[in-house]
Amino acid sequence: MTDLRLVIFDVDGTLVDSQADIIAAMNATFEIEGLPPPAPPAIIAIVGLSLEVAIARLHPSLPDTQLDRMVQGYKDAYIALRGSSPVEQTSPLYPQAREVLLALHAQPATLLAVATGKSRRGLDKLLEGHGLDRMFVSQQVSDHHPSKPHPAMILAALSETGIDAGRAVMIGDTTYDMDMARAAGVKSIGVTWGYHPAETLRADALIDCFADLPAALDALWSLNDE
Image 1 (spheres, rainbow, N blue to C red):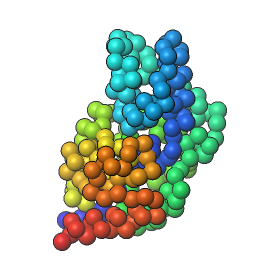
Image 2 (image 1 turned 90 degrees about the vertical axis):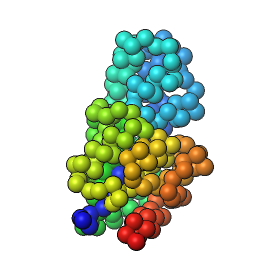
Image 3 (image 1 turned 60 degrees about the horizontal axis):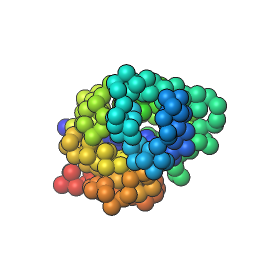
Image 4 (image 1 turned 60 degrees about the vertical axis):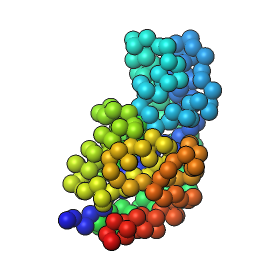
């Protein structure tokens, strides 16, 4: 059995506080269509879902052609925002995220991945803006998978890295992340600083700050090794 370990991160609400960009892009998408923008709490509640699922939840009566147009409109609005404002201002990394990522990345036996509801374009812009584009060996995005909580993203990351589910952990802030982890048969760590209330997550472990992540990972893996 390989000694490699895989740490899979959600992005929005876990690595970065991107709600300002997400709300602005969603508002622009609805306004272009002449629709009233959803309330910010409603937008935050669907963060993590793939765009077509998220927008359909925000406005269930949309015809398919309009939904497809709005999905593309959101992507375009997000990219435009990324080009007009520094990523550090509108989608900042959470405190100590960079330091912990660098420390984990430096461990020879630890591989890092992301599983996100973002599109390929959106993830690329975000990671490039933060200088993290070479940090993750596997990057799973909504373009190629069913929406969370379907386990496809995690299963693809396991397949790409050759790591067994028992040696992988999903880190996230939403029930979608935790349900995806359970469906894929991997352990989960919920973060309490994200977009879903911590008491709803039902994670294998919870952490209150990024500095607590390495110890939480070691604790879960030590249980698996017993």
